[in-house]
Amino acid sequence: MMEALDEESLADDTILVFWSDHGDMLLSHGELFKQRPWEESIRVPLLIRFPRRFGPKGKQPPAFINTPDILPTLLGLCDMDIPESIDGTDYSTYISEYITASDSPVSTANETKAPADCALLACQSPFGQFTREVGGREYRGLRTSRYTYVRDLDGPWLLYDNDGDPYQLTNLARDDTKKELIKELDTQLSQKLAQHDDALLPGIELLKKFHYAGDVDDTGTMPFFDEWNPA
Picture 1 (cartoon, helix red, strand yellow):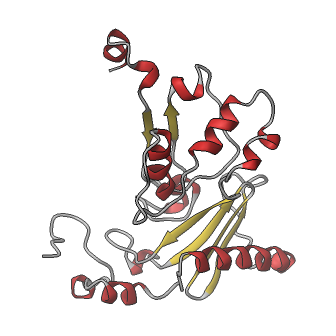
Picture 2: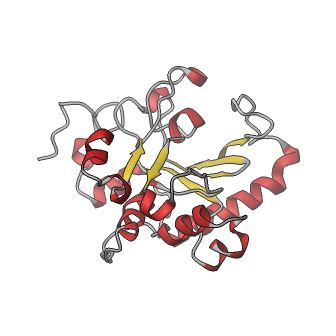
């Protein structure tokens, strides 16, 4: 593809994007597949190549971008209007200013809208392989530059210090010395959820709202493969 773009003199004006919608546990923590809030499942690549706007050298902004932000950001890079119906935020100006700045983006990109200092994690209703009997549950969480914090319907579920524990082997959610940290992260999470009008309801409530409740099977989740056909 790159050879064809070069031959047609289109490479500098073409936006190439490489990304993934989710990872896979691959038996880390004894888990398989997606939907889980651990690093193996939530961390995904996002590479954007646009020489005309970014120049020839790559650079990694120190920021978090959520999946809903990708579409409006790409529309922004194309100088296209972003429909009001689209969720997410356009960070094209921030990315451009960061990459083209000669020094740290502190004096330039901070003047424009910068991504938040955390990513939002969510499982609104477990489905497919993430059945109740294998621990499937509704949750919301944050991935900050240092911590992963996750709350389920019963309260704090997971807390990892990713700097000191990159493989997330020690869950600190029940550590009494981390109560203040948990309170701080939980407040930050609540603020995020309020922005999205997300009350962290049982998944069945959302399935009822969108008329899928009848598709829940005897595992308490929605089937995933070909047998699911919400006509």
